[in-house]
Length: 206
Ligand code: PRP
Image (cartoon, rainbow, N blue to C red; front, top):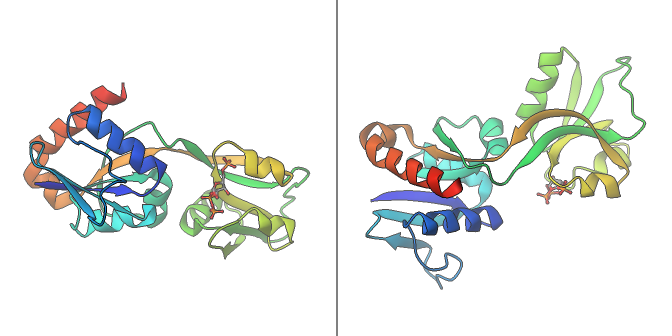
């Protein structure tokens, strides 16, 4: 039996729907009562829901064989897993954003607030720009409004949060979408089984 860690929330629900359409799952994963793990014996798959930021940890340590995770978390955590499939859902962009009239004239160290410290560091390093990274846990858009930072590095989905706070996208760092990941050791021993699941998922997504 292979286990799959799904992220709690809409993305996890959407992926569970894909698995149902692929014939790999049944019922409603949010309606399991007190059960934390749901099994589909015919498909040989076991599902459980975890915090989105924990999915890659479960997979890297082999507590889950497969997982669904956003590319943002995968890049930020640099998890040692195989990335097998871009599901093309949960799409958004990792961006630099700031006040509409902000211009970085390079005269002093740029202050950048973000949850994604590694992604931000790597991005500014590639530009050769010296930055002070300020790590926040959420509501990143507040930082430039209150003078905590000059700009932010954050996820932009609809752009509504930026707009409502008079902020603009200043640069796009990378497109984000949900990925299917696998534990490296499991993949070595179960590659044909896992490839079959990938193929079926790809058919359903199309
Ligand atoms: C994310 C992100 C932005 C917002 C972008 O926040 O950090 O704040 O969504 O979405 P939009 O472009 O559609 O407005 P999330 O809701 O995850 O909460 P957070 O502030 O705790 O990060």
